[in-house]
Length: 345
Image (cartoon, rainbow, N blue to C red; front, side, top):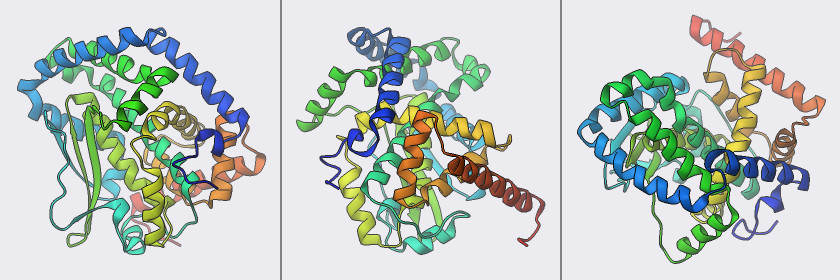
């Protein structure tokens, strides 16, 4: 297979899967911004300034609310004692302190995986990593809309916020479904022109044996997005092998800023399909969603890519459906044992 620098989704997925993603993207473009890309871009910039001004006196309160929301909605954080550092700021550069290593750069991957309550060795490559990255982006974007669930708390700060957040996110994310906008973004990246609303990094502190999600953003919903992105970066470790050098080479050729626009464009629909599986096979325990993903990421690339391809088309084979059900069943049994304090049989 060619380097991922040259490989697009069309090189990874089947024509039918790409047709499904393209249709969903076109529908999203109409629904989120009515196809008005220029208007959406202007609106998002205008609303961003308004929201930042409203939020400024409440930044510390909103930072804690973002942490509380993500912990409440993603139980896997508590299971693995993952710490969160979240900041609303005009300077979104992430600082890595001494003793901390970005999780994708950790050498002792076996020990790192063993420190999680999920995972072990796995077989994967560049194409698999690209799809996992898209799921990470999709989960983060969908998660950024979680502010709707906490309207009452946000209304205490300003009754305008929830409506403005919705308008801003629809405008800001809707433009990623437009071909011309993607081309413009890639041209800007080629000229080192990049404007981000937030950044995140998942790091591992070896001395304290803990994961930390470091997230910074200009406004609250983007802070939610960045925290969730950091969480899913930790889950994505399940797609790595025990060969640290190979992992780093895969990251070097796939985790590119030039890949992000299309990862965002298609990732939200791939994540939607995966979340639909959780709704079908899972119980009401939200932890099952991320534990299932960790098991899915551990599949060899030769099984992982056809699974995602069929999932996008909504045509999982009987064998894939059986594996899905069995995996969810096993996760549910394990979680019940953990919650009741029973030892594994």
